[in-house]
Length: 110
Image (cartoon, rainbow, N blue to C red; front, side):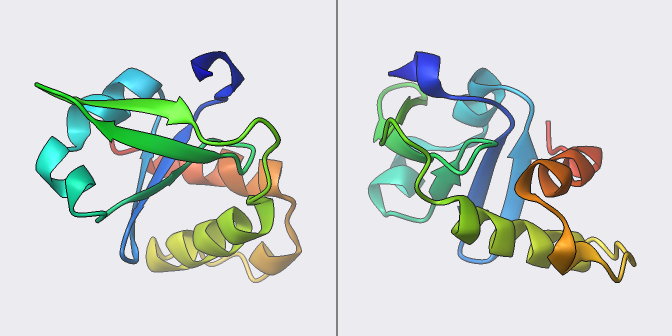
């Protein structure tokens, strides 16, 4: 189910958001113990919910759904993320998800 995943990978850790260009860089960033403690919620760039599996020595990311059903939730997350990054575009709430994802890539974690 990894073939459904379309980067970037967006990780929400209770309001703190990180953007990763690849599945592999997101997998390297998170620790299995934190995944076990359910600290993260992850999405791909289309709003597809991702499953985080604690494996050793790093975690594994898979698609949790075939159809991206969380686009609106991701939009809200990215709007808040961009505001937190001090993006001053007053039009953020009118941007499409692909436009928000594109703007967010300027703040890639790794």
